[in-house]
Amino acid sequence: MKSLKEIPLEELNREEFIRQRVQGIAEAVGSGLAVNALSGGVDSSVVTLLGHRALGDRLKTYFIDHGLMRQDEPQKIKLSFQELGIRVEIVEAKKEFFGALKGITDPEEKREAITQTFYKKVFGKIVKESGARFLLHGTNYTDVEETVTGIKRQHNILEQLGIDTQEAFGYKVLEPLVDLRKPAVRAIGRALGLPEEIYNRPPFPGPALATRVIGEVTPERIEIVKKATKIVEEELSITKAFQYLAILHDDKVTGIREGKREFGWQIEVRCWESTDARTGSPTRLAYEILEKLAERLTSEVPNVVSVTYNVTKKPPVTIEAL
Ligand code: XMP
Image (cartoon, rainbow, N blue to C red; front, side, top):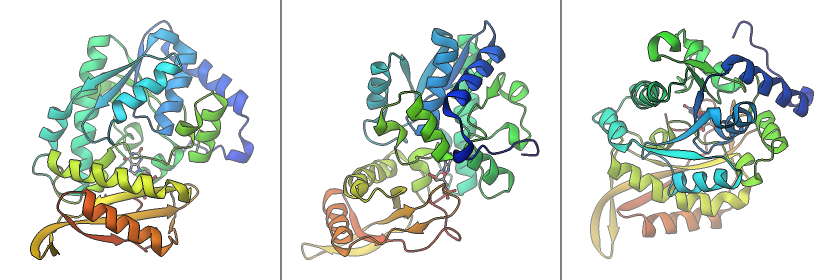
């Protein structure tokens, strides 16, 4: 962080930034190979385009299917990039991730398990097999800031934590977006020709739906939060809020359905107004929207009997649940 300075959106010269970063990547990688993991979020999508401009086919782009993504996400993303002329390989890794997450309930331990599985086990192997010595990564300024100030361990920050990726994992990480915050990253995405539904997408965390499951992350619990996420996104996209999400609570509560008691799951909905995720306040959703959410979540997601809306600001609560 010492030598890192933010480029604010107002000072960003898009074409110049793109030219400079494309050149930087090309020079760093030389005649070698690089790899990157595409999650379909804004940051990794922008990095994918910059990297392909710099390296063409010498950048191999992978989508790691850890099973924690939103419904149908891997195929949708592969198709969107295919339309941009970029080949994305989907890597099946659900078993590795759910294995690593088994029995873990502590938030930081979950993040750590995902980091290790992602960068060491799954990606380390891909990098080794591909012969690439560079990994392009979409770390942004807010990620670094929150990590070095100890707010949260972002799963994508390694060098800032003093981890030598060359030594630990066998590759060097290049972070071409590290001095930009999200609005500036979106502007670069737009200038690079990304479709609007990608560059304007609400942010989505690297550890994906695992950040929205309180308690143990199992395939069954991810399935619940996946269904809830789909409903929340369908109902709240009209709000144009910064981010909206569904969280699955760890504890169950007693409900009643068709005259029978049902000990079921609780879903918490959050919807955020924010510009850069550093601070945020809950959107003042219309009561009709909240009622519709409660109705759909309890009728369409099996065994959900309770829905709440969080009205806390960030800080003290964070945007995600872990
Ligand atoms: P929090 O929950 O810390 O989130 O208030 C701030 C913003 O960052 C996103 N987020 C992440 N993004 N890797 C990411 O790339 C992560 O590990 C991560 N954790 C949180 C979150 O969605 C919000 O936009």
